[in-house]
Amino acid sequence: MKVLVAVKRVVDYNVKIRVKADQTGVDLSNVKMSMNPFDEIAVEEALRMKEAGTADEVIAVSIGVQQCQETIRTALAMGADRGILVKTDAVLEPLHVAKILKAVVDEEQPGLVILGKQAIDDDCNQTGQMLAALLGWPQGTFASEIEFADGKANVTREVDGGLQTLKLNLPMIVTTDLRLNEPRYASLPNIMKAKKKPIDEKTPEALGVDMAPHLTTLNVAEPPKRQAGVIVENVAELVHKLRNEAGVI
Amino acid sequence: MDLELSDEQRMLVAQVRRFVRQEIDPLETDLDPDASELPAEEHERLVAITTGMGLYQMDVPEEFGGAGLDVMTRTLLAMEMAQHRAGLYTPCYGTFGSMGLAQLYDANDDQKERYLYPTLRGEKRGFFGLTEPSGGSDPARAIQTRAVRDGDDWVINGQKIFISGADRADFGLVFARTSPDKGRGGVTCFIVDTDMPGFHVRRIVHTLRSTHYATELQFEDLRVPSENILGQVDGGFGIANERLTRNRIPYAASCIGVAIRAQEMAIEYVKIRETFGDLLATRQTIQNMIIDNELDIRTARWLTLAAAHKADQGAPFRTEAAMAKIAATEAGGRVVDRAMQIHGGYGVTKEFPFERWFREMRIRRIGEGPNEVQRLIIARDLIGGAFH
Image 1 (cartoon, helix red, strand yellow):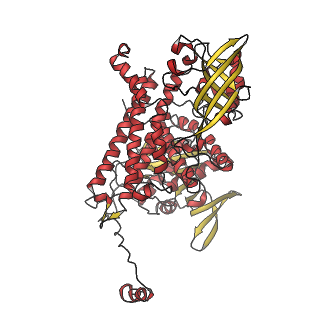
Image 2: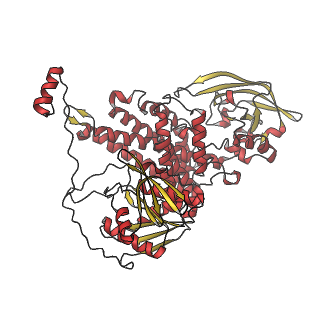
Image 3: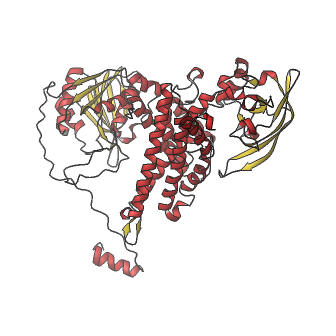
């Protein structure tokens, strides 16, 4: 089975981001970029399937500017077999990404697509679900465990208040949750090998995907600053403040 | 010179950074603030990870199973590996392995069999015995320990000081004078087994490194067979010179790594710490400290990477390595000092790494050839040896 993994280049999770002065977005100049952590989990899961013999090829796809190639290289260094870069400078909305991924799926015919449940930059949590809808495939979102048996997959999902296990037909879409696995460290030999692995370049136009925007970002603002706390003298004062100032009792 | 990292370097740096933040940092919250070792089971667990990364024993030459990294990549990794409390002297607590004594790679086959391979397998430990009470940086004068030939053996008498690990070692390299009048060219390197009669650890010498100590050694009619001579008689200083000079560059880099982490912590702190109703970050006095830190870090980093680049080109790099060593150790000291000052009372507690870095960084200006001797190397290069 061929497994397609979508990897997104996002601001590194360690970076404390700043909103641009004109409030149109996040300042990305000189900011360290990395693979979306949920996508690392997706790559790791695909590699484990390959090691277990369930998958025979792992393809990493990234969509965006030229530097997304670095994100694909990282996936190749972890052990993915080849990469596809869909190059565009356009502002990407989840629906664009889902449509491009659908076009790639149509070409590659994978048995499984694994995506992060969301990207840590925009936190949309939409692409996997949209891709499943566009393809008409079953989806197992927020997966914390995937098992294959009798040509079907059991996907355990982390839902509010517990775990839900779905039996899904292949081909299917999986989006990863944090507890699915712990991504490996890329090894020096694999990092050296990654340079020789092929990365195909495509464009949304060549794939026939319309990149017209559907959303307009009106304003991006930092969360309001937390007010300093106060220290109360005694319980009576506390109760007074809770009742009259906070209005919670 | 192109300072853009290659894809490979960028990924390796990212892997090691993740290792330090994800594996080493959490362990340090529970370790003794002066610890230089991990509990055995943690060490084993982390060595399994570094082995999986293909970076265990990275400093061992490639022909002996090491990673075969170029100096630039090794230097970049050294900057990452040092970014934790014990990072200056025990980067990642030794979980990336150790090359052992650089000189042993130039030993003959029999000596490799007896000393190098057992060291690489972790079965034997060696020490490096050069410095004497009379000094260490100018061996032509300072080496007074004598070795006199007696049949097939050599008989050694004398003493050594500031020798690390000799009390726990199985063997060591001892530099002794074999030709009294030949200065630098009259010193021989002997491989000495610590259970040979006449080998004594006289006392333990405590230093700024709280849990680490050095030893003072005495040799009394210590009889060493000729086959334990490393290299040639009177050729003790011809061994592994280039390897040793090359090691000076990652040595500098580890000081920069600590400085980078100290600066990161300082920047984080000034944005949350209030004094007199405003954040430290708004105070120009504090801003200047942060700025000076950054200037120090970037200057030292540039010089160190330039030295690494030169070494990788196969060009002479002694002067560049000396400059890197001076710049990084001195910058490191200043940056840690300022970061400590910014943290105020917390800066000197053992809850933060600054006090350990402060003490250990001070040693770096003396270790690996004092900075004054490094300056001498530069002077010889710039002005010429005739004026020395």
